[in-house]
Image (cartoon, rainbow, N blue to C red; front, side, top):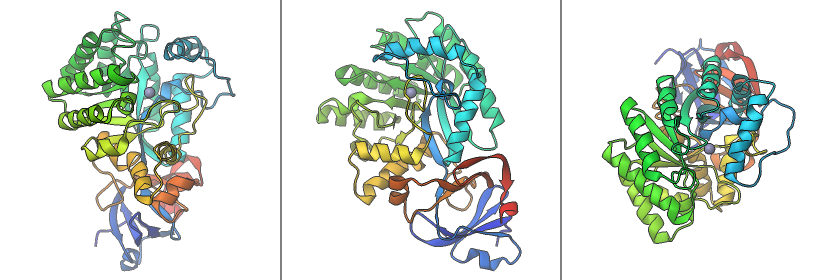
Length: 407
Ligand SMILES: [Zn+2]
């Protein structure tokens, strides 16, 4: 059999089997009942029957906005989205620690809770230019051996209402942003054609995907879902476009939502949700049944937009399940899929899963099955990234530790 560096023994898989997992060169080289017994030289680390799951995928974050690591600050924004946008500009530039430090603080919290891949939106606006992107990219570089980070150039303040932003979005992609973002083309910009034509042109020019914040309710949001699908088809960007939130899909008639779902599935437009408080939720199961790729993320984590959150994606899956009234095991499994396999597919992570050949990005947890892990979400015992231990007992490790040293 393949030579392995070390075995994790007595690992409970999501399907209930108790197996040994062999790791070699940062990849999973063996998965099988009694696999470790066939090797008498590889070190073994006994997982004692705990559940072993693939690293979690946070499909929607805002690393640049977080206040993680700072003393508590009361929420300062008013009740509207526009008030929060303006509050960002009065608070974030004056914080005592940099974007890079704050992003790093939050990355460590996420890694400690089993996140191995994430997508973060990063504000691109006239006031800060590319500064926040530079900070987030620096944090990504610093933690590249703990987590993968995708960045979205996000026009938080709008595109058409802020002349000069399209050029900065283009510059952001040239300077390392992985995708182009957008925001409420009608409600924020009052110019859906202008914004969507503009951001799709940037994406097409650079061969990158898009991830567009769509908070707009009802028919207004539906109009933009249709416009996004039409442009995705026209530019052949299927599989590379995501709608973030899509609250409208939960606030229109079932017939119209089903038609929108069919259009999204046909165009290859995905949806990312976080089970927002106080707002309608997209009909997750209907969308999935229609063939739409639905995944999830934490969105705001203790930041200028929301005081809540720890970065725990299992807790997020529980919130989504609670909000969606997911009670049966099969439904709770769906909530887990949103923060794992579906997220990996959306982010284009090919070497994913607890299977031979995949990267050894996984975590262990004292739970008997996936629904229990989601519902109770106890601390992650071990988190591995590229086969190295990066967190233990809920705490981030200053230096990744070789599995052979642990065994
Ligand atoms: Zn967001």
